[in-house]
Image (cartoon, rainbow, N blue to C red; front, side):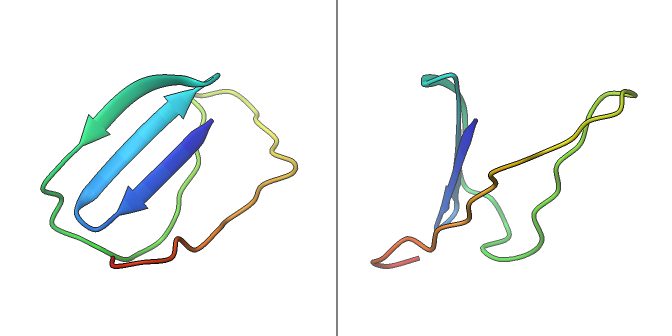
Length: 55
């Protein structure tokens, strides 16, 4: 999964395929939350990368 938050746009890719885009979001900074729908879930190799350029 890859999530890109740039300016007021959030884009999500799953397995390399574009899954969704949200534009005109109100927030441009905040927390990152990962969840599962009622099941135990574990994460590994999480990477957060700051994008260069305007935000």
